[in-house]
Length: 256
Image (cartoon, rainbow, N blue to C red):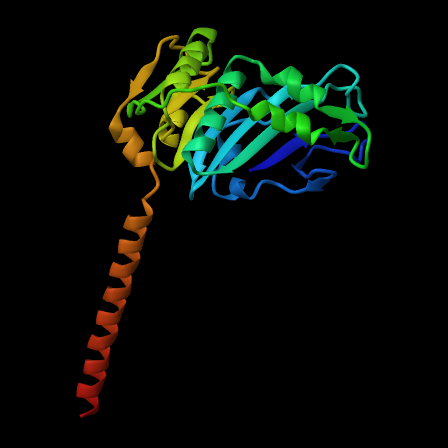
């Protein structure tokens, strides 16, 4: 497990940056998984948002835009926003932990606890209590019924947030790579549909009921599996080898 914090200090040169949380210190580092999961394409870090994704045997849970307390402001007096990212290896145990954290985020239970774990001071203008952060991820008992495969979208609306939290309480998430949950202020229904997400809620969707998304859009959006990519690469290599052999035969024939 690796935990990252995005925040800032009060001074002008203490701007927003990602930090890996270590026991006694913060290390400036953007989560490497962001290179494989294009989070910036579907959310605004300064707005309350959430992403749950799986990629290459790793889970990512990203929660952004959480308000800090009033005394934590930047050099222009603007309120500071905190974001947090958990990166876990893919396992049933960690899947339950991330479901639990996602449930708490959907119920707006993490903002205050995260804020209380971040204090003013230190080299970067804020310090993080690692033990307090880790205490956020001690889940209650969750069931793990097989996930419903249908992909659904709806408005970022209390009723649908509650329904999604209840679903995560009782059901596992699908066994596939890519976006699993997106809560955003940024994207319209068409963009979320093309992202291939399993469950998506957006301020820009008007429907206050879940809408099932057709498999056609999901297939268009889904990245090729590793098996398909490997097969395509093998086919391309074989074709190139065949062409090279034919050219060699032609050159020998012309030389004769």
